[in-house]
Length: 145
Image (cartoon, rainbow, N blue to C red; front, side, top):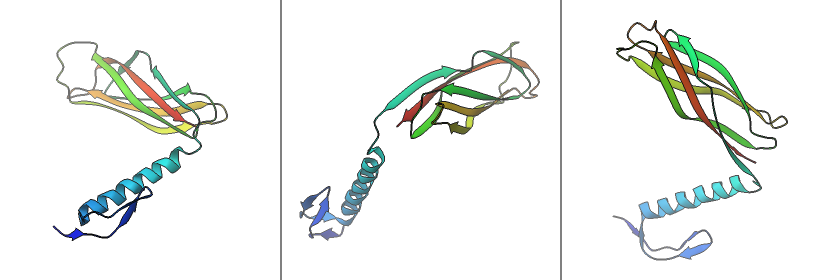
């Protein structure tokens, strides 16, 4: 392994001990990541986490899609929505599951009104995808400002 004995700075502290080139590269990556995090959090004064759900819904066939909205409050700089749980169940029994899938897309935040909107797409089907079922999705909104 290549060794270096030159001095280098990590977070304003000079290091001069022997270290592999890979270790020096890792130290610079850590320093860069930490500086990016410090820049990203500078000026952030609030954080909010909110949970919600779609409510229990009846559906038919193999897929569903709906627009969802919740209000997190005004003045946030970064807002995201994550799936935090789900429930699906066929109306009748003895199905061999082919697909279970959920996704959030087109997440949008209005900093003036505090509204967060997004689209939920889901797939729940057996081999022929033509059955009645119920579904519910829980979400968590993360906001920093």
